[in-house]
Image 1 (spheres, rainbow over the protein chains, first blue to last red):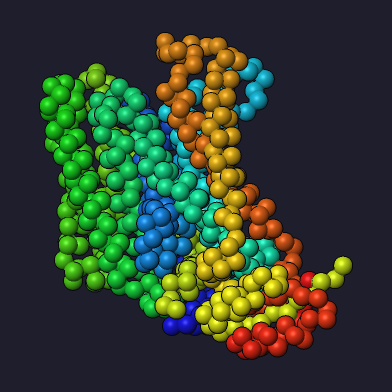
Image 2: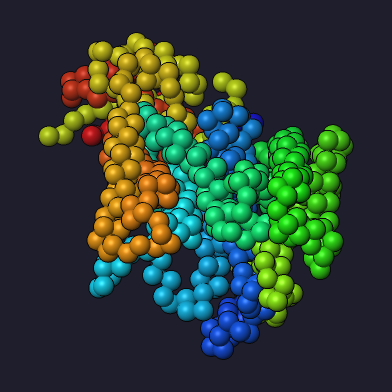
Amino acid sequence: MNYTRIDADLVKTMRPAGRAYYIVLACLLAIVAWGVFAWSYQIRHGLGVAGITWPVGWGVYITLFVFWVGIAHSGTLISAVLLLFRVRWRSSIYRSAEAVTVLALMTAGLFPLIHLGRPWVAYWLTPYPQMGGLSPNFRSPLVWDVFAVSTYLIVSLLFFFTGMVPDLAIVRDRSRGWREKVYGFLAQGWQGTDRQWRHYAAAYVFLAGLATPLVISVHSIVSWDFAMSIVPGWHTTIFPPYFVAGAIHSGLAMVLTIVIPMRRLFGLDPYITQEHLANLAKLMIVTGMLLGYSYGVEFFVAWYSGNIYERSIFFYRAFGDYAWALWLLVACNVGSPLLFCFSKVRHSTPWLIALCLLVNVGMFFERFVIIVTSLARDYDPFTWHRYAPRWPELSILAGSFAWFFLLFLVFAKVLPVVSMWEIKEGLPK
Amino acid sequence: MTEHSVIGFYVEVDSLLSAVKALRGAHEIRTISPVPLHQVDELLETRPSPVRRFTLAGGLVGFVAGWALTIGSAEHYPLIVGGKPLVSLTPFAVIAYICTILFGALFTVLGMLLNARLPRIQVGRGYDPRLTGNRFGLQVICGQDEIEAVKSRLLALGAEEVKYVEV
């Protein structure tokens, strides 16, 4: 392995794609178009076409919002937190993980809009100079969410782009024609002088330092959307750490789900090794166990509180209409990652893919169970109502996954998927 | 006024560092490399990057802006919501915290761009694509009458090639 080979191998991933790439891209685009149609149908006919109705006002849309914000977290963990801890193996994997963060946030940001009956007035949630002098209610967790998620997206984008500048210069220097111009523009005239590296390295560490608390705070704030209410099953202090653990768990699963095929397709085996994947799997054992502990504490606190509403909702979760989802999520999120304790499982690509897909499914249902069961069985039995998503919600769900993978496919072809300069820096001198 | 310089191309980092050690003080020098070389900063005894001050300033601006936005808007339109105090410090602290991080990050990037003199429409003179690839460059700023002497010195210090560049 030397500098020349690293440049050649990694710039090669950005060569014009083959037919299979465009076929997959077209399929994803078709699913996104169907999702957009479903949303436009919902806008034209009103939110009544979706399954969400009183008292279950938050259904699949808010489930997906929480799910996608959660997916974003592992990227920041891998890129920022592991940078501060000087973990060397992060350099192979962090660019893809950061892309997952940015793209997942771009997907998550759609759901509060989709959930609104009138998405064109979404700007009411932001502080803007309104004629009557009204401002958003800064005591509301929903407004904290607007600030937290937008800040997370901006900081992640800055960190993502800043980390890429030296690599864009490498691509610029190995391109001709319009590509040279485009990458030259993006590289901003980077040369790699000692002066540039000095300020760059300082900024990079400070950005990592600023992004690190966001790993903890953003999903804590998202959890307060629920925990600040007085709804049974939501009003609990365990939510912030519980949500953060879940976010990192799901994010790691998504990073692995994406990186494994990408590694195979682009021939990145020398850069993203089986050991890197196994390390991520080890992290998932930790996050899976943290989640298992949180699930246990949730039930224990509901029982120990002596509060009949709390006890009732948790009994309903375990044995009611959605019990299948609860037991499925426990098996997927807590049970399946335990198999990673076996080295053979950690080092087997089919096992990794299969277990990560299960965790992705489990994490979706975790949010679904939290949101839907508590609303479906509120204090007053007269209002109880079962929720089931209808075709617009299911279409938008499929569209959101297609949108995320579509964006990732585009990223993988137009930007360097592995940090070249950091791989070079990590080579033995 | 046109200045003159000579760039020496090195294959090994160690040769470059030896050359930096030999030439520091005698000439104005700078390195161009595909990876950050922290040893160069130590050899040239450069001051720590002032980017940290930008980060601090940004954080402070964000902190103040967060409180100003929340308290200012509450005072501007005094409306009691849910029996909570008009200026509710605990929830407003969340916004102040987020603004601290947001402005800190924005100012950090601004500080990097200003100090590293980026973005540039074109790369600087003397730039060579090999220097983002597999070579390390040492650029020595010199007078017109010193060009040949500097070239010989760089070659003697292990450069595989030297190139004259106007700066």
